[in-house]
Amino acid sequence: MVASVDAGTLRRVVVEAAERSAEVRKVVTAALGAAPQKRSAPRSELSTRLIGQCPAMEAVRDAIGQIAGTNMPVLITGESGTGKDLVAQEIHEHSRAANGSFIPVNCGAIPGTLITSELFGHERGSFTGAVSRQIGQVELANNGTLFLDEIGELPCDVQATLLRFLQDLKIRRVGGNREITVDCRIVAATNADLQEAVATGRFRQDLFFRLDVFPIHLPPLRERGDDVLLLAEVFLDRIAMELHRPPITLSRDARSAIRSYHWPGNVRELSSKLKKAVILCDGSWLRSEDLRFLATAESNSQASPKRRGPKGRNFEPEEVALALRRNGGNVTASSRDLGVSRVTLYKLISRYGLNRG
Picture (cartoon, rainbow, N blue to C red):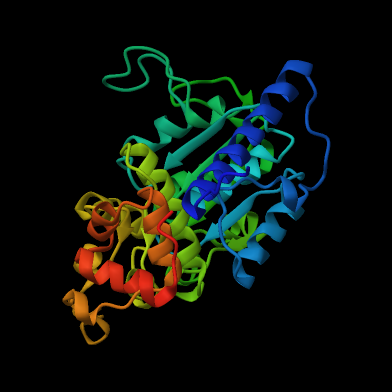
């Protein structure tokens, strides 16, 4: 007899298997000492990080497959929270430098007085406080990938130093006399309009041309259609595992609320707010009232309706059947999950001709 498996559990198993498969491939490759030789990455090998089926995300996956096997710089653009760091990691993991280090640097988080030293390193005594030699992030990325996030925040003098490195593949630590050859892939990302920054003199045009050879643009979540629901389901599975909760399913009204919200913080905001919603949720169904904090001045006109009494609540047959299966046919537990009375649940079971077993 074949046991039934609910959709949430099935999604969770598929995601975990895909992630483990990617890790196993990396371990086996490292053990055999075989460096990747492919000039492009087959799309079937791209990991579950880049979730989405809209045409724009299909184009992103295509672009990664085309560029990953080369050593060309890549410029990733898109609003904050769209997942630019995930694209950078995908490029690294399917590149010839996959066995090397992936070194991320947030250019906007380092004070301007320290960023040259942070990127290129310094020698002992080169400035006050330099009590020992420090290896810079560029040097640490040798034979790997250097990810420069928010590159538009780099001061102009550091931009010039980075440009020289891209031309010569050589660096000189602050206070040092020796040139050091470094072979690393540069992947940069920004949420700013670099062309506008070039026009206003805030970003070097020659550096922009160096980086913009192969741009990849990530669309905002509000332009990705039903991808937001696909992402929400995957995030819910991961959050439930993290919080040691049983699988949680989106109700119809929650799906409507998620689909209609603008998501100004993009994928990062979706993940964060779903975690909050799961904490507020007291059953195995996530409902619109668990997402009530999505209501903003922007979306008040489309705010989801408040929770109504049992007589005014509608359910799909699949929702009722899934609640019964999860609770072994126990009407009391199932009615609690659905947020209705036992009498209402009995009526729904009768209306849809459902089997409590």
